[in-house]
Length: 379
Image (cartoon, rainbow, N blue to C red; front, side, top):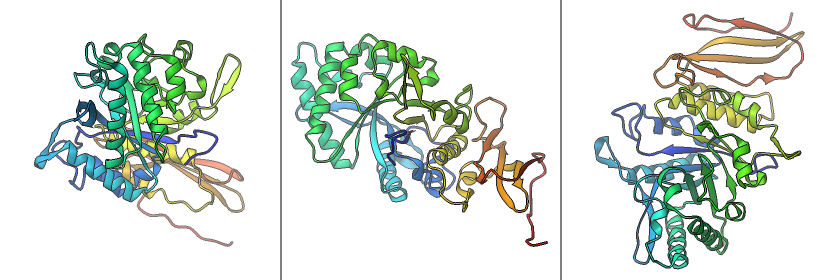
C-alpha cells in the first residue's frame, strides 16, 4: 500500500494492556481483539504500532521487550503480542509491525544511557540488539512516542547518537527496517537534523493540540510529516470521523509557499473503550485512501465492526437507473459512542456508484430499523 500520496500508508496503534469490554480477554468472542480478526480490520492497516515496549538489560548493553501487564485467564502481554503478530499477519500478510516505545517511567529509551558511560557504545549495542529482537519476532521497525520522561531525560546529544546509530544499523540489513517518530510536541531535547536524516516519517500527535506550524518551525522537514489522528470521545474536528480526517489531510499542506503531501496517517488506537467506533472509522478511512475500483461493494465488515448500528439516513442517486447509494448508520452501543460525548456513533459510509441522476435523501428514525428491501427492474 504505497503510492505518491501517503507513501507510508494508513497506520494504527494497538495498546496491549487494555481489554475491552471489561473482563474479556484476547480470546473472548466479543473482545476488541477478536473484532480486528472477525471483521478483517487488519486489512486496512499498513503498519501496526504495538504499545508499549520497554528498554531492558541484555547480555551486552540493552534491548527491548513488551511491557508487563496481566489479563483475565492468566494471559500476559507477551501472550497478547504473540497472538497479535500471528493473527494480524494471517488476516493481512503484508502488514508491518512497529515496536512502539514507552514514553514514561524508568524504562524509556533514555535508560539506554548510563551516567559517565560511552554514549556511542551504548547506542551501538542497543541498535544491534534491537535488530536481533525485530528479526526474531518478525517485526519491521521502531516507533518512538516522544513525550513524558523520555523527552526530558534524554539529552540532545544522546538523541543524535542513538537515532543516527539505529538508522545506520537498520540500513546495513538486507531488508528494510522502519524508524517512526511520533512527537506530542516539540522539545529542546530533539536534534532536528537527526529527525530529518534518520526517521522515515514523523507523525505528530495533532490531537494533543500542537499545530503543524510548531513542528515545522522547530526544524522538522515538511517532507517527513505525517498526520496523527484519534477517534476517541472528547475529540473535536477534524478528528470526529474518517471523512473529517480525510478532508483535512488528503489535499496536503503548504509551508513557506510550497505544497507538500502528508507521508502517512497514524491513528491512536484500535482498542479503547470506543473500539467499535475506532475500528469502523479506520476502515472507512482506508476506503477513502483505497477507493473501490468497481461498483461492486460490501460494507458488511465495516458495519459489523461498528456493532451493527441501524441505518438512519439513505441517499439514492437515480434517473432512468439507480446510479448510486450511500447510507449513514447510527449506533448507541457502549463501544461506538463517537467522539462528541452524545452517546451515538455516527458512521457515514462511502457513496457507491456514480454521480449521475438526482440525489434524494431519506431520514430514518433511529428506533425504526429497516427489516426488508425490495425492488424491480424494467417498466
